[in-house]
Length: 81
Image (cartoon, rainbow, N blue to C red; front, side, top):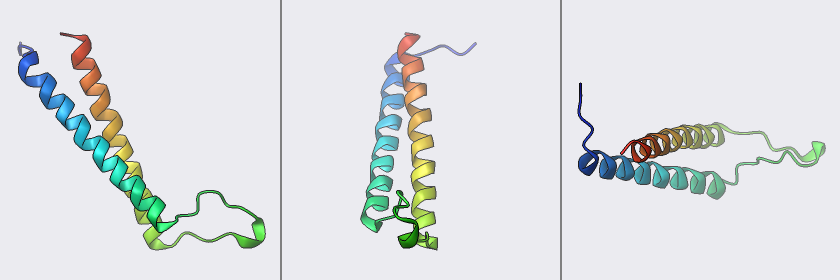
């Protein structure tokens, strides 16, 4: 059985979460800076997503998943101390 060592695991889990949150914010900033059209707007003026738009959205998607998992792991460790 592996012993839980909160003095080591909790700070690491928090650091992992903070890093993931920063990556998410950076990815979101990239989407906003590119002006990726989220709201399709008027049907006559829809701007298609280009390859760079899709890449920015995929990066955001990945970063969000990593942030959610890191936060859940950190929360789980905090509940079990």
